[in-house]
Length: 385
Ligand SMILES: [Zn+2]
Ligand SMILES: [Zn+2]
Image 1 (cartoon, helix red, strand yellow):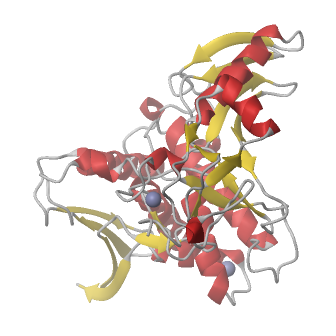
Image 2 (cartoon, protein in one colour):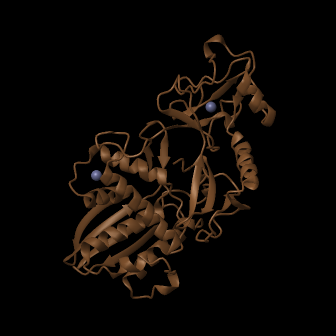
């Protein structure tokens, strides 16, 4: 039995035939062995997500490495295209705000989750496109498909780990609010808001975040299941509260609200409950707490306009300005998360005294050992959006 059974992965077998010939001419296919038992046999292109049976003789397993061939095909198309000015492979992380002339296009040097990452000078602005490729067997699946990518599958049972394709559901955008697989309009707006805040943290405050937009979507789905709120502000609070345990005390007549986080929670994928999505939202969730508490406990709002200013740089935020305390906590959280010398149990404590004489304490208690390979915390996430 494959180790990731039930976690939303599929295998693709290609039977000998026209499609096989076409693929084999440009891409090396691994011929399946004949020792596989009769009960494991599947035919045609199989997207078996229940049994995860992997092979049959007379067919080949298609691995996710085909994404490399797809990238080369895109590159070759773009180089020959008269419609676009292809400027080659770039590191899109290097200069995220660069502006491209109309029609100019570049390809990111590596794949991005399950996607090929393009940047293009479009009529109104320069925009990034995540282009994902999926295979769907219409006769066997219902709105399910498997996507290219996701190299981080941990499975020691299957011979070729690259044979695991990430299964996903094809969404058709916004639908009615009763559909449990689709976010309601309010929740969709909240989803976009969370993504926008993440974007502002990166572009204006220049602090890198590693959360995935898919994890936000899953958080909102979890929230939506029990949501009876009448206004979206309560939904926002609910999402923020999910990152923390909360305690309210009166210390020296000051109402003190303490939010404690241990980081690295996991939430189940709404579509594949056995697939756990790790939340790497530690910088973002500190920002969300700061925003929530400052909106609730102060009347000052000038910080919001300043934060939205596209030309804002961290050095423009002077000590004493309200936004400085946001920048300060995010820099502290970022440094705390990166500090591998700190022992398990180390605490980061930051407090804010608000205009209405209440106090908020942000507390992060480190819950992993420093000798744990910190890189392993970062390798399994993907943004299959
Ligand atoms: Zn496996
Ligand atoms: Zn809600």
